[in-house]
Amino acid sequence: MHADVLRAINVQINSEFSAWYQYLAMAAFCDREKFTGAARWLKSQSAEEYQHGMKLFDFVNARNGAVELTRIETPTREFESFGEVFEAALRQEESVTSQINSLYELCFKNKAFAEMTELQWFLTEQVEEEKTAREIVAKFRLVGDDPGSLLDLDRELGSRTQP
Ligand code: FEO
Image (tube, rainbow, N blue to C red):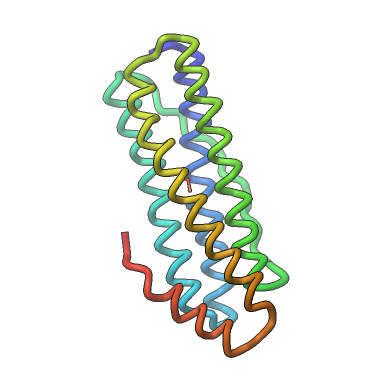
């Protein structure tokens, strides 16, 4: 593998595992506050992020590169509201999209064709993840502080199927 590309993919592996940990911390917050549907949604999302990290982990090994796991930062554990949890999730997804775009550009410049093909899956996935997060954020903004509507939203989030 091209050295710069390998380094950047290792950074992305850290980023996916950081997202796994961050979503888990969000789930813990919601569970603690008995917003259990949202907690279930966030646990599912956390599991997806773990799978994203492992997808790149396995890819690097398949390409005979060296996976270099690095430190995962302490995630944000407290939030002002349930809406803020999902606002943070959306910001996180937008940031991951921009990282994947930069990584794809680096692969393109270095003619790393196999890596570009692998990353196409992530480009498509980010479109979906951003869309989903944006829709949830829009619903939280719409319902505001209305307890009944928040409980309905929690029920809806809890109906997410597990990955
Ligand atoms: Fe793996 Fe939500 O990006």
